[in-house]
Amino acid sequence: MDIMAPRSTAGTEVSVRKVGNGVLLEPIEKKFDVKAWRARLDAWGAKEFLPEGRPEQPQWTLDDDVTFD
Image (tube, rainbow, N blue to C red; front, side):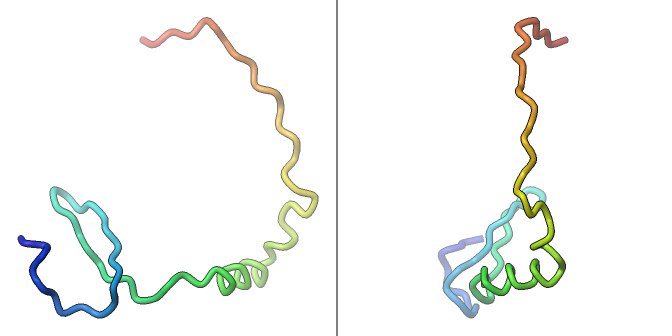
């Protein structure tokens, strides 16, 4: 298929993903609204999730004895 051939789709942007052995181009309907997304998260209670921030994580230790079987 010639992807440079004219198409009658609305919009100026597409989403590209691999499907099987081919590539699927799907028109993007609208821009992602970050403010609306954050408002939905807040409505679901996201403000109460980790109010003090992420807990401190334990220090990683390097193990020099690494083997791959």
